[in-house]
Length: 76
Image 1 (cartoon, rainbow, N blue to C red):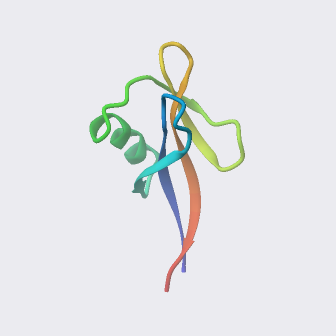
Image 2: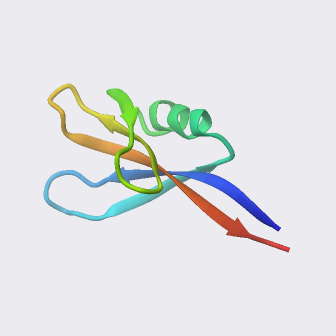
C-alpha cells in the first residue's frame, strides 16, 4: 500500500548546510504546526515552487527556514 506523507525539513543555518528531517505527518497543516510548536520556527508560509515541495517557511528577511515536502511511502 502506498501512503502520501508530508515531511518537515528544517534547513540548517549558519553555513553548516544540510537539512534536518524533523517531522513526518499525514497532512500539510500538521507538518506546518510542528515547525512552530516543536521547533519554534516563526515566519510566513508560501506554496512551494519546486516539484514535491508543498510549502516553504520564510523568515521576515526572506530567508528560507524550512519546507514541507510530499513523499509517497510504500508499506505492506
